[in-house]
Image 1 (tube, rainbow, N blue to C red):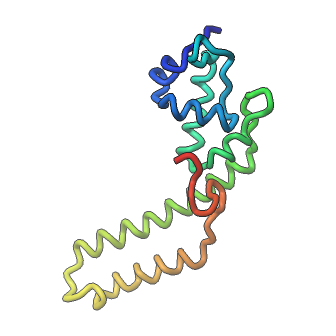
Image 2: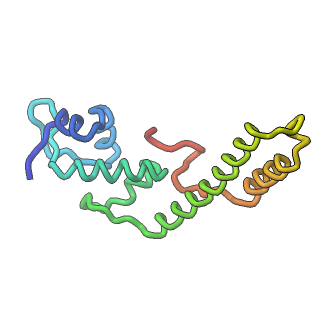
Length: 149
């Protein structure tokens, strides 16, 4: 396996050097040395960065992603967390469908006012009910914010 300079890693991964340094600081990636002042990485760091990006896209925090790597740096992803995240995404998709339908109806409704439209009232009720009855998953959140974004 070859060594890559931090600039090469940044160029090939699309991850800025400042983010690479931060990821190293919090233990997500490890440099294997330095060439002058520039960090050197094993070429496998590109795969690790892809996994980190996938985790972020799925809504996991950087702390949660860090917990998905063993001490040897290899992925050790808890399947229960993946199931919980998939369930959370499913709930979000249902909520977004209701919102999409409501917006389309509002845009196309011919009632004198939207509040006079029985379909619109049903959509409002459904949107409110789904928010009240579906507890939000805490996965990927800490204090309402995702880390590292």
